[in-house]
Image (cartoon, rainbow, N blue to C red; front, side, top):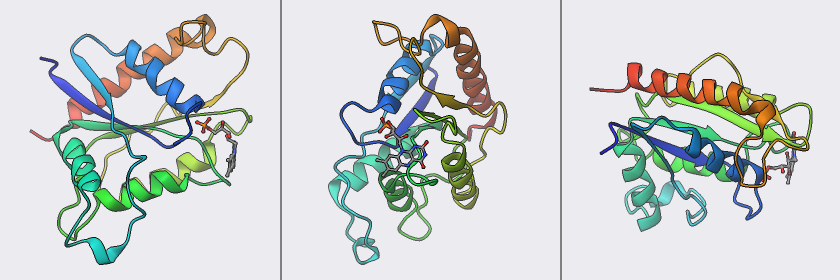
Amino acid sequence: MNDLQVAIIVGSLRKESINRRLANALIKLAPEDVCFKIVEIGDLPLYNQDDDANQADAVKRVKADVAQSDGVLFVTPEHNRAIPAALKNVLDHVSRPPGQNDWAKKPAAIIGLSPSAVGTALAQQNLRAILATLDMPTLCQPEMFLQIKDGFFDDNGNIGAGSNKFIKGWVDRVCAWIRINKAN
Ligand SMILES: Cc1cc2nc3c(=O)[nH]c(=O)nc-3n(C[C@H](O)[C@H](O)[C@H](O)COP(=O)(O)O)c2cc1C
């Protein structure tokens, strides 16, 4: 049994997502006593406040996965200088109904990968503001604004040699952050 459970939310729904590839590579870097699990969000309906009293099964499943986790790692692209709609959708769903915000008190960390030099920086700033509202203590530094270049992933889907050590160090820091800040 792993003693730390970390939910991963990937902000992209597309099959060939570079951020999903990043999430899968991060899972392989996790310390032995930490379990990273991707929580699937592609089957969530669009958030509608009318459904707060009768949430869809997919919403209940995601809320339970988040509630059972010790912390959350967000791996997200940037869409039009903000977070993707799919990510905002899951943030809203899990925050409801009133008084049942399952994000609350969960320590969090953010990472994102982009073909552009902006490296998801604006999406991450946008996400940080939302996570503050949701009462999630979020790792501040180092920020991980990643640009994909040749060799970022190796042929086996791992982080390539140029970035592997740096990103592994960050993963260790995220795990320590979640361990220190998780609710008892
Ligand atoms: C609707 C849309 C808006 C985008 N806006 C940005 C942006 O603001 N900044 C950026 O760096 N990339 C932007 N991109 C490019 C994405 O970084 C690129 O498509 C990336 O592969 C998305 O990540 P994914 O492969 O994990 O889906 C945008 C892409 C789409 C589809």
